Amino acid sequence: MTEPVAVIDCGSNSTRLLIVDGSGRTLERTMRITRLSAGVDATNRLAPEALARTFDAIRDYRRLMDRHGVDAGMVVGTSAIRDAANRDEFVEGARRLANIEVRVLDGHAEAEFSYDGATVGLADDSRATMIVDVGGGSTELAVRLHGVLHAVSMQLGCVRVTERALGREIVTDERRAAAASMIAGALDAAMAAEPVLASVPGGVRLVGLAGTVATLVQLDRGVATYRRDEVHHRVVTRDAVQHWRDRLGAETPEARLGHAGMVAGREDVLVAGLMVLDAVMGRVGATELLSSESDILDGVAAWLLANPHTAPTWHDGGVRWPR
Image 1 (cartoon, rainbow, N blue to C red):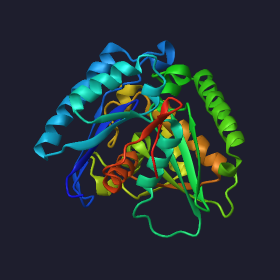
Image 2: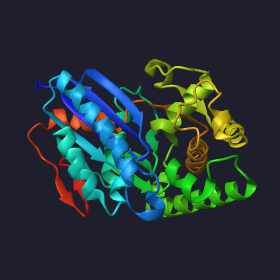
Image 3: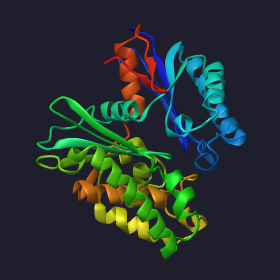
């Protein structure tokens, strides 16, 4: 296959685009904060304003796709969309604007493509590689052992935890306790469903994905302007996660924007994401994590290039991707 392909990931907090050529070389990679999940946890519906922000991004991405001559691709929806009663409204609008297929991924498919994308190009390690993908509406954990992917998707995204428990202002003891309880409960259920995640023989190399991890790396390195090579494959310690969780939690969102590396649009939800990240690290026994800027976009793009004539099929409200 020589034609370029595009993947648009409509997540809970951001809408992102990846265009690659037929050899997998990146032609375009961009992101916009759209907060599609705003209010979904309370109303079970995608708000008109959130849909409008996301559709505006998709419309602009279609222009970039036209510039690169893209005819094939996929729009993928994750937690916010699969949780919404009016998800068909999103699917129909996104398909019309992007003029490519639109698929809503179930949690396992989301974890699998995130794992595939994040593990490409990693150096060998004696430990098993586990990914933690802290999104806006959900967090995925996945590890492949003896050829089998063990994965869970938890309702623990940074936006969801913020809206349900932590709040957006300076973190109080009461709010912190409520968020910690929510996170612990979801992790308890996840580890009960996939016990191997908590006790991988030989320990794990933990690879962190998505905006919470990328912003953490920028903050920890003092990188004011995003550059992929400054963020990709950087090691961050659990001590650093806890430092920034506590430091930012003691500040207003406006004050958080004063830190070099803080991404506008994440200042009100990053503390919740860091709480999730710290709790996961504690559960899997990781004292550090490796950041990855390759993720679900890369995983889906690779699948599209390898399967140009194979269509995914629906199941259980999600989508089954032939492997």
